[in-house]
Image 1 (cartoon, helix red, strand yellow):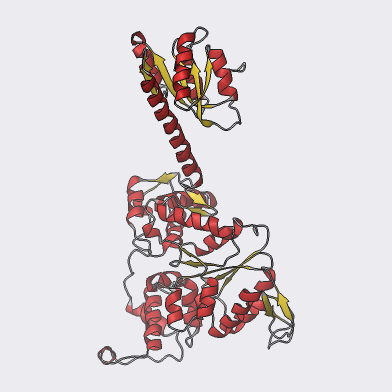
Image 2 (image 1 turned 60 degrees about the vertical axis):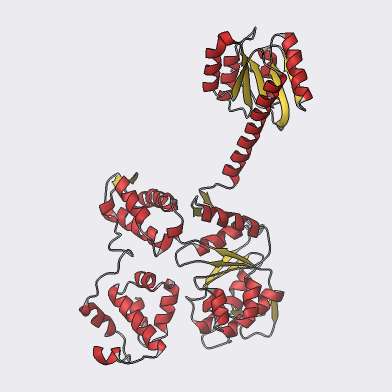
Length: 488
């Protein structure tokens, strides 16, 4: 023990077989040592508290067999130091009948068990074995909590079992060069997952380039990925470096990969297979060392079956699949994320919110969150911006006006939206329409018009109700005459 009374724990690894006996009666010290050595333990025997504290400093044991009555100090004082310093060892106290009350006090201070003198060899060895196994189990639990049971990881917030599985897959995938295919509903955090894989990999210091395949017009996607040379097409007034070159040595994340055209998929396959590509308008072959991560909110196997996604590309990309669970399946993660968002948005918006009321937390936990984390972000930020106080109440949460329930359709709103679609003719009367079978493209178009009308032009909300990605809805809008006017 040093002058401050602090036991400085040794950096030496604790042995599960090492037992420290602190007993001032030498014959008993000899007998106890013999009992435990015969049971296979490595025994260190000392006859004073001072010597015992020195051993705790230099050779931390798995178990301490501690006599409560020592000549230079008390067993209770030693036990308090073990507890206060957080030493990872179990304590078995030895006492006589007259000191049972002291033994009870020792248990309150953290002793694992006690034995009353005199005791047999079997009684001592059984108690010490239990204490040693208990200490080993505590160590394993601590490892589990520190390495597995995490409430966040690389940008994610969440302690649920589904997210623990995601964290472990990310850690395993990060050390590999294999391609990763991330699936999950819109708003679950697929780009956060891709970024986490990159950040946990050996490529963390190299570029992470993200490309949304649904947000870029198809005729420009090849140039976005591979780049182009001057004069390659109308408007190409200068050379352009593509995402492949930008991600050289790092990671290229292709979001909404199932939106990519079949023609471009074959060129991407070549890049994945041998790392070579050509810029648009160039005959020169370039090479790049890229880790590929892709994502989709569709079922990729179904896209292959329908002929919209190349089977050979699917097997090249779908090496390590990761499924991001929707927020409704993550239990208490909703509140963990909501509290973090409340603190962040309160600081950003200059508000004083410190937490949610119990009713507000119950409302958040009961909501189904069809828009997932993105919807939760929307709800919390809106509540913070529109309200003041230290506690965010349930009536401040815009759940009813958000994605929780569809807004009522206003005929005038639907008419005004339809009027913006120049060149798209109105269908016949309601009675006639109900008796006809329309082309699929027309049904899809009408569904988009209907959703946008209901959401008063809010593309994000409309996409949530249609259960498609926001970028997908923007692309679908662009495919119909006049729909681009709604994007603004």
